[in-house]
Length: 241
Ligand code: G3D
Ligand code: MG
Image (cartoon, rainbow, N blue to C red; front, top):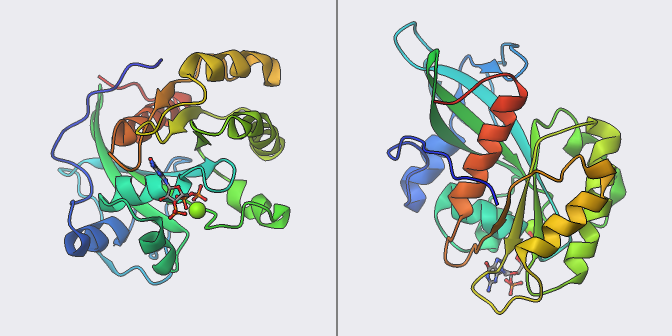
């Protein structure tokens, strides 16, 4: 199990529908991405308004990280995004937004000062079966949240396939594992996932954090995205204090 990181509690998407949609989907006019490149004027989605001013020397530094959710159909990927970004349990709400990219910001403290990390969260919206979409989906991802359904053991078996296909495009990448639906009786436990991870990809993912989560209750949902943020930053050589 990983250790939760401590991030500023006041930062992130607002819990209500109206205020969450505004800031969480608002594009940054100029932001420095994880690669250090300057992003264009448009943000997470073509329809997102451009309203935030660029960083000044006084304001926190900003990074964008693209994260993807991987896992079999109906494990709860869209529900986890809905809970994390919009603080609601409703995958159909996210689907009806008509976007597969949403965003939420996490503020972290580094030895060099405060950093606002904008997590661009990519979802496949019910297209898990179509291999052709995955090339674009995986490309330039900074990290992945692997999701299985704790009530269905076959979704644990699916993990190795998801990891292998992502590895083909991304090589080594930071990953966090979420066993979703912890509000229901489990068919397997975190130690089963940890055992499986030791067998996959020469153990490359063996030390990755594994959490039981629930999109329904919200248990550990923000934690897994914060862990992913930390892992992505560490991969880029950015330490958190
Ligand atoms: P997917 O995006 O991985 O395909 P979804 O999965 O987010 O669409 O969720 C699939 C179904 O699982 C949905 O049920 C959703 O409500 C349910 N679900 C997601 N997360 C949880 C959870 O944490 N607990 C419980 N009990 N159910 C969850 P429907 O009936 O809408 O298809
Ligand atoms: Mg979905």
